[in-house]
Every structure is written in structure tokens, then in C-alpha cells.
Length: 636
Ligand code: ASP
Ligand code: SER
Ligand code: ZN
Image (cartoon, rainbow, N blue to C red; front, side, top):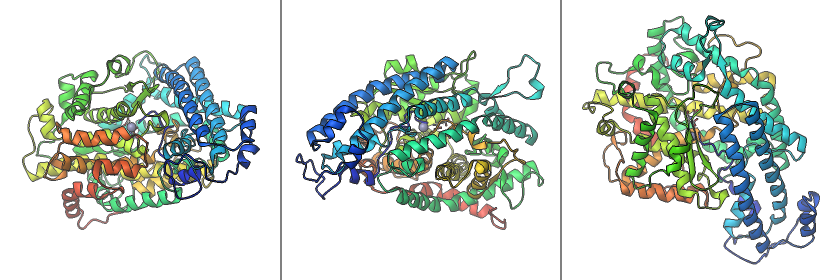
């Protein structure tokens, strides 16, 4: 993930209301709009602003407001992010408290400034000023209520949820009373990836999902409190605010997401059908139904979100080489730092500057043995001073090599935009931020891996190509419905359509409807399975990952073109292309200064998100799958 979830994109609807009257949204300096400020009068923030409300607002005043805002936010967010960094690297009651305090201070400031900014509603402002003011309302993924006690409670609840997840452990009976430590997600993930015994998988799956039970009451409070906060700044509920970060009205964003999903769903359906048949062969008919959903513990991943770990069970041509990078990484004892250096070298090959020295001094790359940390991979930019870091408990696996590239994508975004006004220091939209490192990882082709000495040979025939495409599809295509449903679930929760009693049932309804997976067995009354997925307790919006899966193929296609590559997309690598690097840099350096379609134009010349690049990439595999699935009843 990217840590700075609170800095996101911007909705056109919001720009319109911030810029307000008249069509001329150019850099006019004269306030030509009538100024209605009943909101400001109704919510005087302080004596000073109440006095200010008596006089009409001016462009100069707005400019000064934004200048002060920028400097205050730098200070407050630096403090908050440092506290949070320490907390997540060293989870104790004290660091929980310090992190909540800093969070609370930022929240208080943000709500106050959002209230004060209402004064400028209806005033015609230069676009960069209007956009910063509009971004202010989107700057927190959990806006706090004005009430001080409720705000403090929300800050505490957020920290506690994150820490409960970070400390989560499963203590199986067989370990009770023994000296062996209980199992953390780090170990349980390994079991999910490597075990091929259904009972063992079920044990690890159920064990981990058990950690979420105590998160549920906190989550309920967070829903109530952050909804209230969102409401006070003008959104119907928190989901409405999240959906407002895409330069279009929320309803249009929902339709947009649906359009993208429908374009890729046929490919997912073929993959699901094929994988189910193969799993049935391995696990037997009583474990894997012929026509129903696949039990969620059999797909090689705790959340059944990416399936590449079960490649061995579904390999199209098992006799062809599989290009097992993990084997080489582990066999050669490639260290965590070396893996990150390999990732960095890809970015520098495009002409981007190497990472600052402090990145290497301050990042956390390995799981500490003696304390609780939040191991979920994340990238950080602290204080807008190019103080960039990643925090990740790296293992020598192919999956982690890809995640390293993912996190570095965030970091190189930060290094390109840290000199912008702080409210512009985010992705064009949050899907862009999540998609950069993945785009680079698409260029980590066998040819490139061979040059690193991580595989011995390149694929040289159609069968090997289908093998490789299968591995990519297990990672990318399998993820699509998962990426979609997490926030479909949360949108309904925030909107009050899903009540707390139905949290778990609604979760599994969506998991079944979109992914075609089922809960492995009945779930008990206390179960809160969504809470066992990092981004739920961490309050990180998730639709960004769905968008990123679509966008990364679009970026890849554009950069391959810039690099002068003519072959099929799955064989293209932009490694070493300064021309591609220049296009990438142009987009990254824009941060969130402009609506995202303009950033998309900078890299690709296109203005709309386009699923056709993903479909084109997987076309040979889709044809092969269709053939394999002939005679099967697909669907669930
Ligand atoms: N970047 C990933 C995500 O956003 C991190 C991971 O795969 O662990 O959550
Ligand atoms: N990094 C995201 C997650 O772990 C998407 O892969 O869920
Ligand atoms: Zn990320």
C-alpha cells in the first residue's frame, strides 16, 4: 500500500462548488461572484474568522489561507507520520498513544480549516488555489467529527484497529504450553502459499481469521464516528467522500468502475472455470464443487486475492520450465536489501535518480524478531523533504520481489513530486499511485530476469509463453473481483445498507457473487472476516487497487510504445528506455495538480481509463482457456 491515504485525488463536483460561479475559471484575480457565506456565519471557527466573515472574502485572502494551510500541514503531518512510523515499527501501548495524539491534532486542524474554507465558496479563484481548497475536504480518509471527545475516540479507535491487526497471532492447540511462538501472519502466509493439504490450509485460514473478532466493535465505532465527520463536511457518508476523489461525481464513478469490471469479467470467468477444474483434480470432488464457488482457503493466499502461489497445481504445460525466481532467490540467499537494490536499478535504468541515502538508513526491510511491527508492506514520505522509506518484512520470494517494485513505485512518485504544495503531493488519483510500481514490474520479463541471473533461460516457444501468461493471470486477473468488492462492501456499510449484524454475511455474499469463492465452512456468530484483511482495520480505501490493475496495463502499453517496442505486450520490457522514463516522469511530477485525465494524457495521450490493454495482454491465454474449458459448465 501507500501510507499516505489521506492525500487523494479530487472530484470535479468539488471543484465546481469551490470555484463556484461563472464559466471563467481562469486565473482571474477579481472576485466577481456574489458571496453568500451563511455557512461561515453558522459555524464560526474562531473570533478571528467570525470577524473575517463580516467582510467579503477576497482572492488575496484565499491565497494567504492556502499558504498558511500548506505550512501548517507540513508541520502537523510530519509529526503525525513520524509518530505513526514509530508506532508501526514498535507497537506498544505508549506508541499507540503517541500516534493517536498526533492523529487527533491533525484531525482537529483539518476540520477547522475545512470549516473556515467555506468562506470562499462561490468566490472565483485561480484554479490552483481552488483545487487545493477542494482537496482539503478529501485530505483525510476518516474525517473527524467536530466534537472533541468523539474526535479523540476516532483517533484512538483507528490506532487500536491497526495495532490489533499488526499484533495478530494464531496460537494453535499444538503450540499451547510449548515454547514455540504463536504464528503471525508472516508464517501463516507461508502455509497458505505452500501447503497442499486442505486441513492444514483450513487451520491456518481459520486461525488468522480469528484475530479479527475483537476488531469488530472498534470497526463499528469507527463507522459511526467517521460517517459523522464526513457528514459534517458535506458528504452523505464516508463512502460518498471516498467516491468523490476521482474528478467526477460519485454516481459516475460507480458507473465507471462497473464499465471496467464488465470489460474484464469474461476473462476472469474463464480463469475461474479452469482453476476450479484443476483444484478439483487435486483436492477431490468433495472439497471442490463442480459447479459452485471455490473454497477460499485453496487458492494459495489468505484472502484468495492473488493465486500465483498455486501455479504448480494449474500449470498449463508442466513439462515446460516455469521460471521459478523464488527458488533462485532463496537458493542464492539473496538478501532483502539486495532485492530492493534490484528494484531500484530498474527505475534508475529509466533515467530516474537513485534513492536518497536516508532511504537505506531509515527503511525497515526485514521482520524484527523481538517485537511487534505492522508487516504489511507500505511506502512512506515523511515531511515533504524527500525523506522516503519502505516498511516491509521481505522474504526471498517472487511475490515479494514484485511487491518491492510496487512499493518503490510509490517512493519514486514521492521523489518526483515532493516540491509541490503539500495538498498536490499525491497521485493523479489513488489508482495511479498504486499502479506505478506494478507497471514497472510488468517489464520484469524473463529476458530481464535472465540478465539479473535470476533465471537460467528465456521461454522460447508458445507453451512457455502460455505458462508465463497463466502465472501473470493468477496474479492480475484473479485479483480483479477482489479489488472491486472490498469497497462495494464498505460503501454499503457506510451507507447503512449493511447493518453490523450482517457485516459477515454481506461480506461472503459479495465474495461469492464477484469472486466465486466461498467461506471454508460455517462462520461463527462472532466472526468478522473483513477485519482479517489489512486495509479494513487500516482504513485504507481499496478501489484504488482495482483501478491500478487496469491502469498498469494501459501505462505499460503507452511506455512500450514510447520505448519503441513493437512486439506483443507480454514480451515487452521498458528496461533501460530513457524515452519511456521521460513519459513516466512527466506524469509523476504532476502529482495531483491537475485532474487525472490530464496526467493520463501526459503518459499515454489518452483521457479515459481503458481496460483494452489488459485484455490485449492476456488475449493468447484467454483463447487457450476457452479451449480448455470446452464442455465444462463454467460459473457458480
Ligand atoms: N502494496 C501492497 C498493498 O497495497 C502491499 C502488499 O502487497 O503487501 O497492500
Ligand atoms: N497490496 C494490495 C493488498 O495487499 C493489493 O495487492 O491487498
Ligand atoms: Zn501500494
